[in-house]
Image (cartoon, rainbow, N blue to C red):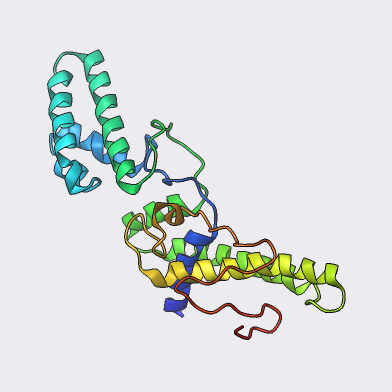
Length: 230
């Protein structure tokens, strides 16, 4: 049961749309919080965990400049802090293959999942995250399936058959996409081997509006009405 719930939770990450980057560019997100703490404590290493090794030199240089400028007065301190925060977030996002569009205000509406994910770290338990994700995945699956089940499969009525296929394609793509996300075991910024876009919830478009796309990995297609390989 636990394994199945964990899989369902992973599926949600790929199945539901969400803002690119989640909250890594918000003023109350973990990247900015870590960078602020580094400036106050003079300890950079926690920040370096958020960037690639190749980007360490840029962050170290920015940190050194910020510490020097902060000594010039309150206004200079604020400017130095903002510049350093922007640099860290920009470099972090570049490492994910995501654009930097500026620091976002604190208090963004991130939905229930992201705040719960962060809270779970402090609580040392993913129980609440699991509850949220499993419920959302279950709802999404039933919504997709019930839309398909309400239509008769292809037969003599071509228009009705096309309506069935139009419900079948997103249903199967949804199932395939979340299954790939659950079984890929990708690292940060990866999902089913599809790079940053897939990791942030961008689903691949169907190859044809009335034909299921071939599954990843070179598998044979299948007959949507009967489930047989073709």
